[in-house]
Image 1 (spheres, rainbow, N blue to C red):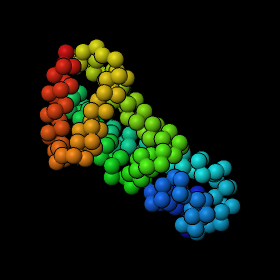
Image 2: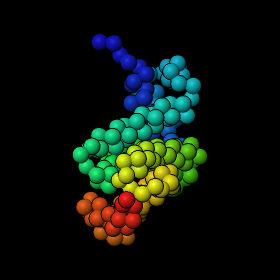
Image 3: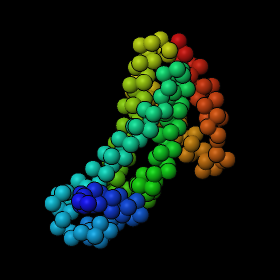
Length: 190
């Protein structure tokens, strides 16, 4: 059986970034976890940033896959947006690496981590924007600015899932859907 060193390095780096964050992860740690020499890492990746970016590109792709799997063509725009957002944010919250990165961004403010969190958010907004454009074309919602609407939907969702829980009892998925319907979609309905 052929050993895939590149894959082992990516797996080890993901583990290290998940445990220690970006700033505290070293290429020496990754090499030890992957059971390779540090030089082997550099045959695949120029530096820690390139390795990190590859991992995060994969995480964003996985999150987008989760969102796309949430879409049911037989359901309304509102139901699909709720399901996709809920699943993406649950993925982000349950994925150990993204949890550690959000923590590092708040506590340390590492620039590459801030940039990465921004990319994740932009990815979610782009996904929502496409769904909003289709919903406008189908006459499911009023003509709105898709990008601003996507941003508002994401920020409201984060507030209801993450920020609310900091001081209150967590809201159920159904309660969040009802709040979205009340505050957002009744105003957007065509």
